[in-house]
Image (tube, rainbow, N blue to C red; front, side, top):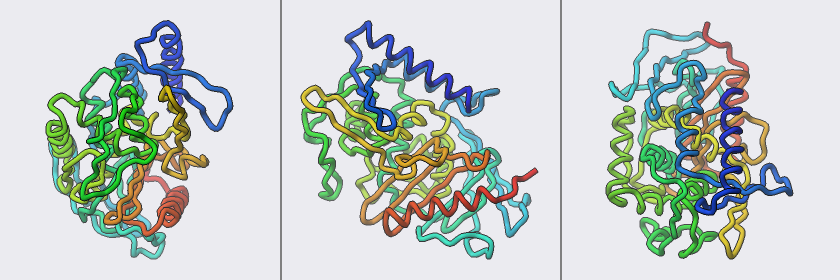
Length: 356
């Protein structure tokens, strides 16, 4: 991971240098960690590709971008049960039924309707509650939006202007109140604001400007889900405002594992604070995940979500006590309950013995 961070910082440094010598890239005004100093960072398609191709979590043998192989085993009581082992991969998608473990005496209870904690290295299921049930996932949808956008290898410096149609949410749901029709960002900025601030118009614009438009984009989302073995998942649009966007916690565990291989998604989804220079104003933005904003946890992937039908949701790829883990929570009653569930589960994982 240290090597990955060094690679990322070198790419960002190169981006700054490129931005000083070219006006073709859109500027991104960065205010990291509340610092008063600002730096203009320019993102080009080559920068994005460098992150996607070179910034793998596996420093020794990077996995092919966009593919994942997950071996899922179930930990029962205090011992690991290796008899229920299945493999989910982009080439051999299979349905896996994961039994609930939340009733075990040594496991914490959670407010969320569904929960999954999985060892990101071994695929061992450490905690599960209603893991196989397909539920509305709200803005967790945007993680697949980011994967499809990244896979397309589009020009990340291309300017995209928000249109009124990008604000038309499903079922009459209102979209963003901080962006406006006519606001222009480059594609990298649109992806950043969609991931860290969960801006719905940005996710809609990414789909609208995809080759073939929204229809092709949604088709690519569903195709990617099938490729990864996310058999309980279905998408109808790119923002998550539509209640018909559904997935199981198990499927989202697979998606988080796949998304963790994309350096751009790791960087953008865990950005705590950014100031977007829109020309006529600066849009100050904070990450929607309090655990990312406040620090204290090593979070590599983050995405929150909320609509009434879905409740409060979050997915994360994190490292707890040197153990990479995937955390999925769906349907918490409040934002605080969601944060409490995540914190309790990560604290619990930190005390678990590792499989030898």
